[in-house]
Image (tube, rainbow over all chains, first blue to last red; front, side):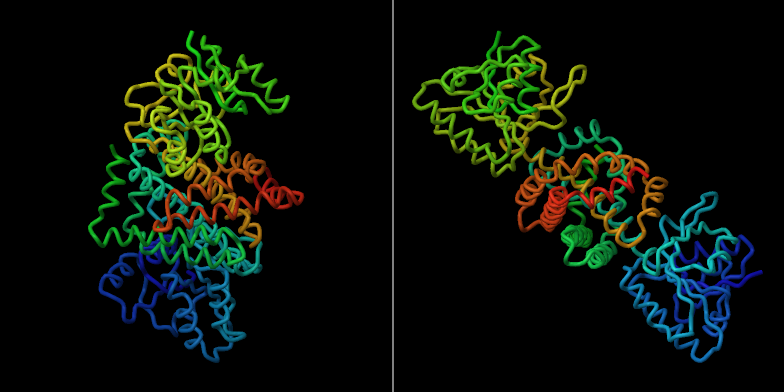
Length: 278
Length: 278
C-alpha cells in the first residue's frame, strides 16, 4: 500500500484523496490550524491527519490549494525537509502560471525535492465519473505512475516544467473567456434593447454556444470573485507584448463587475437570468 | 412590381439583390465609378444600373457597404434628395455601432428620409437556404414589409433606432470573440509546448467549442484585417466605462497580429493549421 500525501483538503483535495483511498492508497494530509469542516471533509475522504515530518516521507506529495498559497506550501515543505538526504517527490497541482510554477520549484533548495508541474482540469472526482484529469509535465521518470495506478486520470505532457500550468491557463482562457464574452455582450444587448433578438438569433444560428452560455453564466456569479485573479494570472502568462493579454485584463474587470454586483444585491445577475431562462 | 434600390453590390449587396429579383422585385443599384467586377456581379444578380435620381424614387433604399462608407452613403443620398417633397425610406444595413447609426440618420435633413436601422446576420443568400436575416429597428410603420414580401428574412425589433446595430455588435462580439479567444490561447499553448494536450482536452471536454474553433480559426485569417475595425467598433459601442471594452481592444490587437502574420507569410497561421488538422 503506497503512501501519498496531499497538502490541501478542500473540495478538490479531499475529492482526489477519496479517489486514492478508494483505490487502496494510504493518504496523509496536514490539518494543523484548519477548520472543523476541513477535518470532517478529510476524515470522510479516508485521509489521515499527519505531521509535516510524516508527509515528507510519503512516496509523492501533492499540493492542491488556492493559487495564492502555492509558493507558501513549497516554502513550508522546504523548511520541513531541511537536510533530509533523499529528495521528496512534489507535484504542484495548482492553477498558477508557468512563471509562478518556476517560483514554486525555486522555493526548494537543490537536492530537497524532485518537483513536477501538475494541473487539474475538470470538477472534483464524483462517484462513477472518470474525471478530473491531472496533467503532469517535467515527469521524465514517470513518478506520477503511482497516482495513475490508484484511480487518478493522469496525463503526462512531454513539455518541460511549466507546460502543465500553461495548459491550465490556456484551457481556462477559452472556457471561462467564452462565459465572459457572453456575459459582456448579453449585458450590452439588455442595455440597448436588443437582448430578446440576440438570444433568439443565438439559439438559431449558434445553438451550441447558446446552450453553453445558458448554463455557464448563472454558474459563474458565485465564482466571479475567484475568476478575477485567474484572468489576471492569464494576462500575466501571456505577457505585455501579446495583444491578447489585454483581453484578459478586460475579462478580470468584467468578472470584478459581476463579483461587485453579487455583493450589491445581484441586479445584473437578475437581468441575465431573466433573459437566459425566459 | 415594387422597385427596391441597393447601394453597394458587393457579395452581400448583390446576394440580397439576387434574392429580391428572384422574388419578383425590380432592383436598382448605383454603379458609377465601380469596377468591371462589380458591374458583372450586379448584372448577374439581375440588378439594374440607375442614377441617384432614379434610386431615390424607389419604394425603399438599402445601404449595404463597408462600415467606413456608411455615413458617406447617407450624405450622398441627402445631396441627391435635395428639396424633393416626399421622404425616401432608407435602411442602413451596415455593421456599425448605434452611435455611428445615429450619425447616419443625422446626415439627412429633416423631411428628407424615413431612416430605419438595419443589420444583417449570416452569410450572403445562397440558393436553397433561408438566411441571412435582416434585423430592423425603428420601423413602427412596417416599411420593411416589402422586403419580407420579396424573399428576405426580416425581423423587426421593438427597440428604437440603434437596437438593430447593437444586436449586430453583440452577436459579432460573441461569435468572432470566441474565435479570437481560441486563436490567442492556441498560440500561447504552442509557445508553451502544451498545444497537443490542450487540443485533446478540448476535444474531450468541450467538443462543441473545439469543432467550432477548428472551422472558424482557419476561416478567420483572410478576414482578420476587417475584424480589427469591427472589434474597435464593438469596444467603442461598449464605451470606456465598461471594463469589457478592454476585451475588444485586445481582440483588435490580436486580429491585427493575425492580419500582419498573413502579410508576412502566415507562419502563425501555419502553426495553428498544423494543430487544428493534425
